[in-house]
Image (cartoon, rainbow, N blue to C red):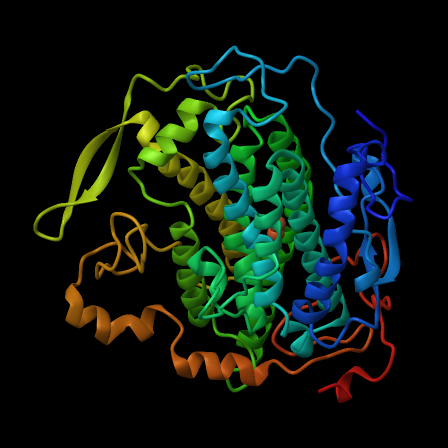
Length: 480
Ligand SMILES: [Fe+2]
Ligand SMILES: [Fe+2]
């Protein structure tokens, strides 16, 4: 494994210095990336100095490097977790064979599709979030937003590296296209639905990082098991960055809840006090959890079975000792809930391999629940008689078995008419969105914070909340 080369034009630990052709190709892609970043990245903050964390090595200690840097000068690089010698494929039909260092011809199409689909979500989320800086509740939050954004940019680099290195000409074309598609663009949208909606308020941003980035964690976790070794190692390294994104979401919502509790104790009407009522937070949970469930794909899926059989995509923690005994998943069934003929809920037994998307999603739901329990604990501790819940897997689905069916958050089929009548009770209404937008006025002074969210317990890298996380080039309040 080559050492980390930080001084190269493209910082990397993949030996770019010795691979002239690849280096040239990536150096040619680099200006296009920067152009995309300046066009589609955070709007209005590219000249400011942001207190960002940069990877300086792939060891855990390599994460401790923080400095003020302008986002376009961020050192986007290509980093892979070091490989394990003589790694074997540890699941599916190819179990026990040597892991692939290059793309097996027969799986080329599938692997390309997996990498492009994952890669597409990275720039998409940056595009979705590009206006959020204008309404940041604090300098600390502004900095966290930009940290998430630059890391998603780096994840794009990671995927583009794989495309350039392993997929020849079509890989290079795919890499170009990743900079051409645009979130929400009618002619060339991003690949997955959830990545085409703008994220224009911070409650949505925190829900996105809590629920949608967590889908990312599970997808990357499944790919980190891949028999295609470069993909596995790339995803492993991305996961370390992804953890911070979910931290931003989970603690962001917790801080909103905490502030709402304070307001509830001082006032009768949280809305009048400019806060976010608990039932409104629940509606956003309902929206973002259901949208993120769609990202796992069909519950009963032949694609998922094929990916597992081929050794391209495993289960989350497939290689973890003691987690699974049988790595072929040829025996056994998954008894899944399916719609019956009367719009009710029936059961169907599906061969295990075909249920891989659902197995991954089950782990995801558990993980979401764990995070949500922290918010509920905050409520209980404060003596507030309210608990958040995750909506049923059948609620508000646009994909899979329950697509378009009128199920309530608690999982009953309520029929079309009632669904339409009550959907503003379950999901954010236009009026709710207007309210959320109205209270989000930016606060750009160190140590100050908007009235709808509590400050964090700790700052970044042992700095206080009042640290100057962003050094503005000029007055941020007067930027258009
Ligand atoms: Fe990412
Ligand atoms: Fe992320």
